[in-house]
Amino acid sequence: MIKVIINGANGRMGSATVAAIAHEKDLQLVASVGRNDDLVSAIKKHNADVVIDWTLPASVFNNAQKIIDAGARPVIGTTGLSPEQIKILSQQCETKKIGGIIAPNFSIGAILMMKYAQDAAKYFPDVEIIEYHHPKKCDAPSGTAKKTAELIAQVKKEKNTSAETDAQLKNNVARGENCHDVPIHSVRLMGVFANQEVIFGGDGETFTIQHHATNRNAMMPGVFLCCRKVMSLNHLVCGMEKLI
Image (cartoon, rainbow, N blue to C red; front, side):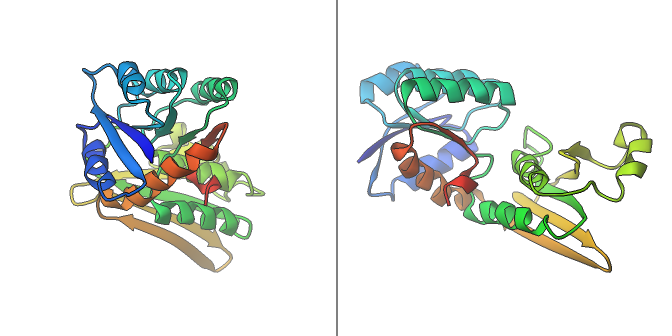
């Protein structure tokens, strides 16, 4: 039985995870904690194996450090970690010889979308991303969109044909945020939970990969998959696409 703590249990994602974990026979929820609780004490009291973090960008780095130092394995869904912070956490995991997972998105469909987008990027000269989320999402572009752009950049051979024109525009006016030379456009609307389109352009054709998640339950199979996978790791993994 894997002993799990959910940090940020009172938030929307945390509450959904608390409800869903009750159906997992090999995962035991030993504590639900929030901002007013002592996370380290809870880890030690319950001898927790895994801590799922659903907190806020401002606190996720500090939380992750506490989790690793206390000997538990972090499964982090909170966005906002910088490359420098991820490097520090990776070194901590290496020193402790303990596994950890940072995932911008836990949806299996979203992960497959990213993997297929990386494959398609080998064959099309142009690509742009449009991501849609609910109005209360704290960050823009989304972590999923940024991760998709990063994966595409690893295999894309040339910049978009619009790159020269885009460079002439001041601050990329109306062209979204340029991430790894991939324009990302963020939409925030009522009625939307989490959708993304990756649009490729070639000579005389376009190719679009889409993913739509209608509620937070879409994330649960991936969250619990990570809780199981992290038990066999001895290092920090960034991106769930490396696990499936």
